[in-house]
Image 1 (tube, rainbow, N blue to C red):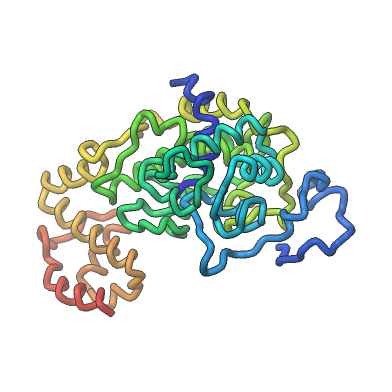
Image 2 (cartoon, rainbow, N blue to C red):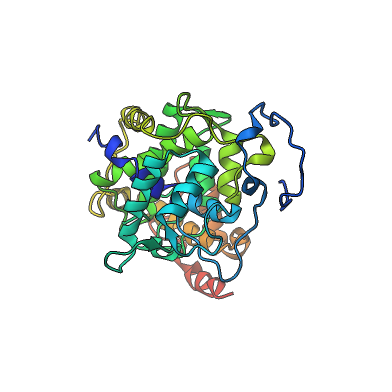
Length: 353
């Protein structure tokens, strides 16, 4: 569900110091010396140009980086039998991740394999909640809503919305976006949970974005690269990206610490089901009758959105009317606490369409 929990778990000991081309194949002998973005193309391997989507029998994980490595063929395309040697070479060739880091990544990844003394893992094993996969993903809905951990456009759009119009994403921007996105996710998930032990890994995922789509010694990510990668699970070679010329290793640790230090003070780093914003909004709901009305409407609008029912203003006019008022920032007028439950039967019927 996350960009690179596996990658960052390999860096966690350091972090805890804080406590289209279409599928062109390899037939082209000519390669321009620099990419569209002015980067040295000598760092590109044939697999960078050999992307293809997963087939019906291929396994994929909650981690977009691992999925992308498989889609390009840097690791087995079927998502099975990821060994130490395969991961070292794949991460090194694809992203210029240093060998010592790749070894740590692999060793941490073995936690997902239930077989004692295993020497491999499969992508499907990574879906186990709170080992690699966790709540508050940048691009996946929480597992309680979607255990397949597939890319979710709405979730990712919410995350990148906090960048505004910025195209160069620095440490403070990603710190703010990550924190506020997690808070948003906690508002809709009553089981939302992020522990202190998970913070270096979760924040480290964001640090990895900065160094993969920027540089380890200049952690400013190109937004176009970042969005292309997430939305396609494909390396943005056609946009001019190449792997950084500085190996990704211990340099990520200080970036993790900086992201934590620059996180907004009004948003918690950790969450439990008892302290999540979902609970707070329900307490706020009880304080005034019109608060109750707002939260009920928002809950129903969430359901409609999840079910991709877009014509609710016509199908459920009272819900649509109140939703319009809420979007304009107005207190609902004379609706009472639950005036729209006459639409509830219609809502249930609509959900079955």
